[in-house]
Length: 139
Image (cartoon, rainbow, N blue to C red; front, top):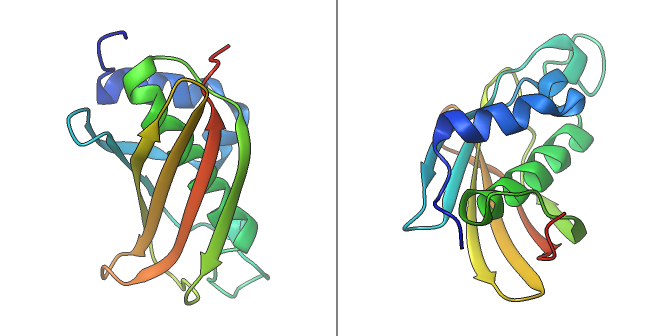
């Protein structure tokens, strides 16, 4: 097991991805003891469900869940892991707000990692929850 990565190191890894960079995700917290990463996202027109709605497209929220889940595992092992599958439950629309995704590792086994992700708006309301399963054969 490698030493846990810092917030700055995680952000550099995130910024290497053109898609992650397009989304504008920011790593705001990383707690290796809790195996938890928090990422923030600000609303802008390119992320809207429909023009002028101020509402996030569901695909954006799903992407944030997948990326945050991956990075919760990267925090511990130092390298990206492939997504096996993930699910999203949308609980309420997110309008004209920033989002914060808190990803918590539930299990990091030899071959499979499982991560739960809560997505909250700026007022702390839960807008979506997700669970991702990742292959632990980093590469």
